[in-house]
Length: 252
Image (cartoon, rainbow, N blue to C red; front, top):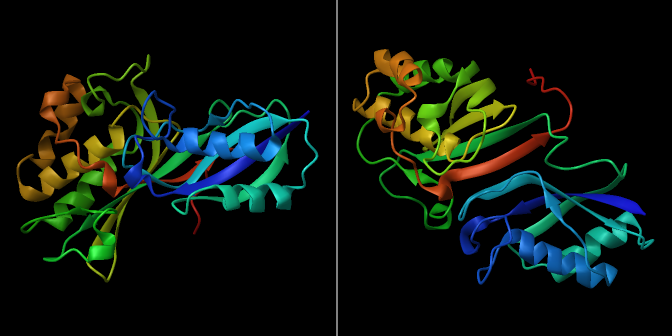
C-alpha cells in the first residue's frame, strides 16, 4: 500500500467549497473522481482544509492510498489530464502511510486580497474584494499586530462554527501593499476557526473605514462576542496559500 500526497491549486468560483456535499459540485468530489478513474478503484481522499464555497487555493494538500504502482510523474500528468482547468495538481509525492493532510498539519497561511482602485480589472473580479471609498491604511496596518499571539478568537468565528477550542495561535498578521492597487492581508497560524480569516479581514476594513475604533480591539477580544467585530467579507478574496508540516519560520 502507498500513500500519495497531492498539492493542489484551484479556482473556487464554480465550486461549493472543498468538502464533498450531496447534489453540488465540490473540489474534493471532482478530484476524488479523477483519482478513482486513474487508479481504477475507490479511494478515501483526505484534505488539509475545508475551504468554503468560492474560496481559492494555492497550496491545498490532499492524500489517498493505493496499491497501484503508477509513478509520481504518471499520477501528476494523469490527474491533470482528467481534471478541469480550474483544478491543477502541482506536486505529487509518496509519503508514509501514517501521514494525514489535516491532522499532521502544523499551520496554514491564508491570503486575503483587497482592491483599492476605482475599477476592478475584469480578469480579477472573482479574486478580490473591492474597497469602495477611502480607508486609513495606517490604522489597518497598526491593527494587524493585535491578532498576533495565542488568543481566544470567539469574536471572529462563525455562529455555526463547531470547533471545541476557540483559542488559536497566530504567528504572522500583516499587510502587503502592491503597486497595482491591491492590498493583501497575510495571516499564518496553527489552525483557524470557521470564517475566522474573513471576519478578521472585515474587522480590519471597518477599522480603516472608521466604523470600529482601533482602541476597541482589546475589548472585542475580551467580550468574545461576534457582533462586536466587523463583517464577514466575500469568499472570493480568500486564498489558502500554504499548509505547513514543519514548524513555521518566516522567510527573511
